[in-house]
Length: 426
Ligand code: FE2
Image (cartoon, rainbow, N blue to C red; front, side, top):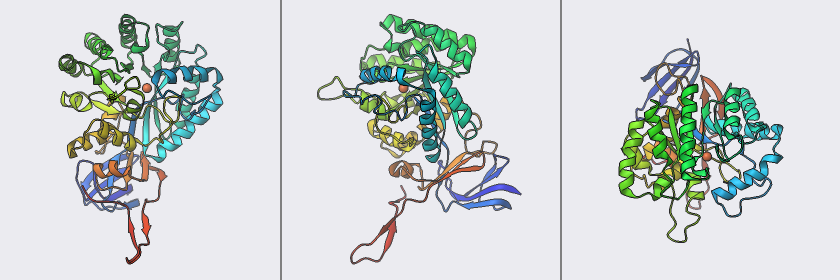
């Protein structure tokens, strides 16, 4: 007897009428039209069953702090960093934990069951590190939280930066972070990349650096990050996040850079909502979009994922943990409007993001964890267009969240009563 049998599901790859058999928290079988005894059965009614959403880039230590102690007036990255500096002395572990747990509730409701969060290691007290390690323990039964040691103030620029980051790793933080474009000089930035890469290689850690989050076309730390990845044999273990300067780079230089990133096996995480908000703020008109070259990176064979980055914090006042909103913005800013392009944007918040995090057991195949989302949509394109309702969210075979279908009851003069949820198969 199966634990759970889902029937008549559509999968992201287009297969329809599919059954997913679940036993012991894992997917036992994925096949068309299977019927078998099960403790629980769910008819998907032709709707989309997708692996859960994954956010490969977030800042959980700052989330839901919007307005504390004030709102970012200029809307720039630099005022956001300054504002975070004002907030840090006011942080308490209890309040930070309460906000992070509230955000994780939102995430689970939206089918987002794995988050890579950076945690600021600049403060020698490591209050945020201890608090997020506690959150990681608390949410472990329902959400995979991976933490990145992130020296927000610059690992070389701030006193004790390296020591604090190493202490965070000693406490159990998973991934080595960095922020080379925020170091004092380009040379210091490159030195920070080299130092942090060697540290990660020694400790056997994954790497995820904020890299070139700037409109400066000469900010080229992604080049150093890729070259160091190659030199240290860390292909597949390193991610460059943001990489917004690539938007403004010279095309000839990019034609040399893209193969270097691809050959080094470095993943790139773009954060469309935040990039379109923070970049280009020094421009008059035309204003640059500031997002990295997503379709070109993908065409070069680079694993590209989309992150949420911020929700209601010193940098961004919007957001709700909805990775379909992230994908929706991503496809607009990157002009990835073909059917194939939209599906690539869906992959950017699911499978590609899972690859960034090295998630085990991810996917919709036999042997994978039974962690998936039933969406009120007929395919990935419609899911993004509608930011579709997450009807059911399962993790390892267990139902974690349910949301009623979003359906409008129409009372139109001269028409019979009707309902609509704006579905048109694409
Ligand atoms: Fe970030």
